[in-house]
Length: 275
Ligand SMILES: NC(=O)c1ccc[n+]([C@@H]2O[C@H](COP(=O)([O-])OP(=O)(O)OC[C@H]3O[C@@H](n4cnc5c(N)ncnc54)[C@H](OP(=O)(O)O)[C@@H]3O)[C@@H](O)[C@H]2O)c1
Image 1 (cartoon, helix red, strand yellow):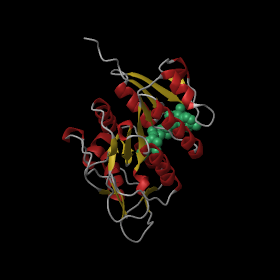
Image 2 (cartoon, rainbow, N blue to C red):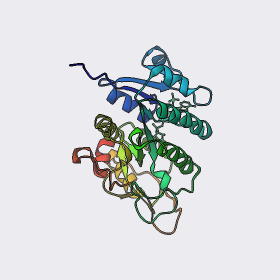
Image 3 (cartoon, protein in one colour):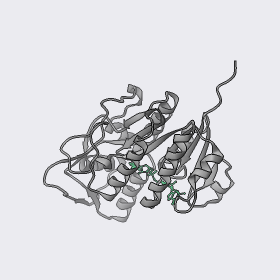
Image 4 (cartoon, rainbow, N blue to C red):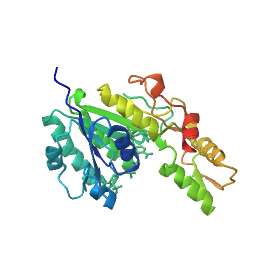
C-alpha cells in the first residue's frame, strides 16, 4: 500500500512567540516551513525558514513555490499589508488543495460586552485591532468551510512568554503594573495551544475554535496571582477602569469542544507560567 504523503505546512510568523512554539511542536511530524521577518544568522542558515515581509513580498509566489496543504497564519505588523497578504493567501487556498489556520483574537468581541462570547456570536469591536482581525476573519469565512479554521485566542501566557517576562521586568524596575479590575477574561498558555493546533491538524478540524481556559478570571486577580506565585514581591498596581460595569473579553466554546485532556483552567495557566 502506498504511504500517505506527509502534510506540508507553512507557518507565517514562525519566528514569533506563538508561531515558533507551533513550529517546534509540528516540525518532527510534518514537512514544516516557517517565515521570519527580522533577519538573524540562525534563520538565515536554517533551510526550513524563509524571509518574508508582508509589506514587500508576494505571498502567492512563495506559496506556489512551497506548495503547502496547511498554512498557519501567526503574523503581526502593518494592518493594511496584513489584510492584503491574507487576500492573496485566501486566493491561493481557494485554488489549491490547501487549508488555512488563522490565529485570531478575543478582541473581535471587544465592543463592550456583559457576557462571554461563543463561536457563532456576532463579532463586534470598537478597537482598530479588533476590526482588523474581523476583516481578515470575514474574508477567510467566505472560503468553503472544509478549507479554514479560525482560532480565537485570549491573552496567551506560559513560562518565558512575553507577557510574563514583561511582568518580571516591571517588578525589577519597580514600575507600576497595570491591572483592569472590571475586565473578566479567560487565558491560555502557548504549550496547550500548540497541542490543540496539532490535534486540529491531525483530525482535520475546521470552523471556529475558542481556545481559552474553561473558567473565567478577573484581570487584576489573575495578574496578582501570577505575581504572588513568582515570589515574595510587592509591586505597585495601577488600577485602570475603562467602564463602570464589568466587561467580558472571554472566548468560550459551545459548538467546537476539544477533548478534556486538551482543555485548560486558569490555575494551570499560572502553574505553567511560573516554571
Ligand atoms: N500573544 C498573544 O497573547 C495573542 C493573543 C491573541 C491573538 N494573538 C495572535 O497571534 C498571532 C501571533 O502573535 P505573537 O504574540 O506570537 O506575535 P509576535 O511574537 O510579535 O510574532 C509575530 C510574527 O510576525 C512577524 N512579522 C512582523 N512583522 C512582519 C512583516 N512586516 N512581515 C512579515 N512578518 C512579520 C514576526 O517576525 P520577526 O519576529 O522575525 O520580526 C513574527 O514572526 C498574531 O496574529 C496575534 O494577533 C496573540
